[in-house]
Image (tube, rainbow, N blue to C red; front, side, top):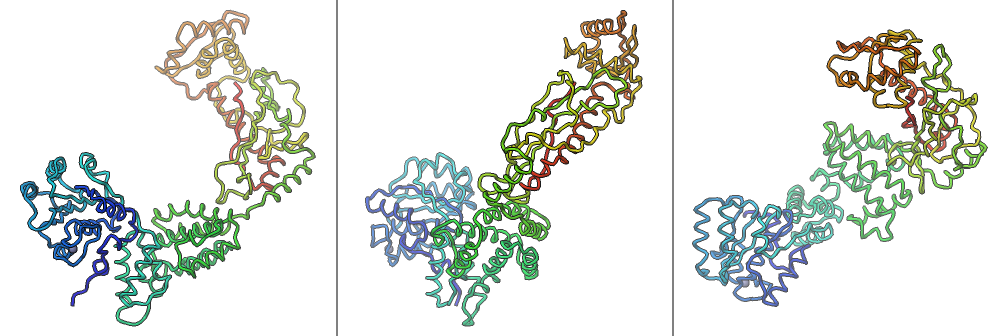
Amino acid sequence: MSYVVLARKWRPQTFADLVGQQHVSRTLSGAFASDRVAHAFLFTGVRGVGKTTCARILAKALNCEKSASAEPCNQCPQCLEIGEGTDVDVQEIDGASYTGVDEVRRLQESLPYQPARDRFKIFIVDEVHMLSQNAWNAFLKTLEEPPPHVKFIFATTEVTKVPVTILSRCQRYDFKLIGVDDIAAHLQAVLKQEQVEADEAAVRIIAREAAGSMRDAMSLLDQVIAWVGGSDEHLTADGVARVLGVAARSVLHQLGKALVDGDAASCLAILSDLAKQGFGLQHVARDFLSHLRDLVAAKVSDEPERLLDLADSEREDVIALAKRCDADDLSRLYLGFSRAFDDIVRSAQPRGAFEMALVRLSRRPPLLHLDELLRRLADLERRLGGPAGGQPGPQGGARSSSGGPAPGGGRDQGRRASSRAEAPTERTDARVGSSAAEASQAPAPAAPPAPTTPAAATPAAPPAPTTPAAATPAAATPAAPPSPATPAVPPASSAPRQALDPADLDQWQALVAKVAAHKPRVASIFEHAAPLSVKAGRVVLGFEAGSFIAEQAAEAEARAQLQQAASDHFGVPTEIELDLGGGHPEIQTLAAKHSAEQAARLAAAREQVASHPLVKDAIEVLGAELRDVRLSRTPT
Ligand SMILES: [Zn+2]
């Protein structure tokens, strides 16, 4: 006796039997009732959701000898032959293989003839998007002027590949993925008929694995029943999980519990067991992600039963665990794991990626409740002796005195750019998690930038202690912050290669600054020049041969500007000579000098900000981290 697979054996025979596609069966039944049956149908949807089955039922309904309604009798020769695929008037065509010119011509020629026996000549074309251009043309001609005795039923998984000319002539039906509940109920019915005992949880695993496809569900059921064999053993969740290579919900539940409790060691032990048993960890990760989703749903919903595609016992476990968790913590776990999930799936080392995700999430810092956070802020405020949220004090400003004519200047204290600490916190609306472990999304709005001081401002006797314009996330700049031990700003020209002696270099800087006052664009040309010699009466500048800057420097206006400035500066007529013959990499240009200074300032500012007590407190109290320090203005 040959074995008939369950999917065929229990294929629905009437629209009423069709699972999960009530919208389709209702519309088709209505069309029959009102005698408005179209001549061409297009069934779309993913594989295994009942398109071909529905096409056969429709063909039977159209041709049934006994019934002219939407429900075929399933007894007359027409019904039986269509069910077996042997009816001469009902042709089932596979779009993928129906490409031959001869076949298409034969089809075209046969169309005008009346059906041999049935009411209608019906063409069921599966995977219609695979048809050749020839075949399309043949069908299109007929679709445009359909003979009354011809019906077409097209089925496709890829409706976007069906030509619009065809689409517009068909009545379209979209088949949906079938819900886990519907699939599970159908499987239960089949199991009962087959006299196989099964736990509800076992059936649920199959229904979930089928991912909306009834055909897949039936194939999986075949596989599972074959495993049980002739024994009277009934289907258990663990057994089914093992056959299908799915981690049992009980294991996922253990893993979830360990994660919620922050027990990294148990997480790894469970994962190790799964790996040893040969489970595909990417598959486990997918199931675990949906388990975490279930926990969140169970936590926030008043009717979790409706949101969880789980067997009763599994659902109870999930609800119980969710009950003792915090909704924000659960959603943080979900978000964190869903981010890790992509890595796990793509990684060549899924186990490592999975493990690291579990460890990271297990070690997530506790969420701080808002009142706790407020308490800590108040504490911080008290310690600093000022109200939170005050305006940043003027001492937050920066002073800049670069370029001042102070050749021997060793103590260039004024040259301190204002800097801004961006210390992002976790969400500050309801809860604040500490550290950027998992939940951190975008950085919280940074504190208002410190007031900037234009470079041109005169260094107006700076007060002794210099204060970096640090700001806490809560913008709690105190009235009088303690002055930190300011690390000395490294000398600007820490490692310059300078051919000019310092006095001449200062002359050169002053000259360029003078030009900049009137013609900043011209000045910027000379900032890129190598000052070869800067003396009263003669200034020699080197440029890289053929460079854009060299061309610009050679322009009369630029030169005249510089010559004028130089003559004024030295008090004697001063010639400007340009050496356009070659580069002078050994000589530092002002531009290079400035960018080196800038880098040094940034490094110093960062160190200063990081060591500022206010920032240290913010990091400690809010669990923030110092991500970025920016100089507010580049001194020129
Ligand atoms: Zn019939």
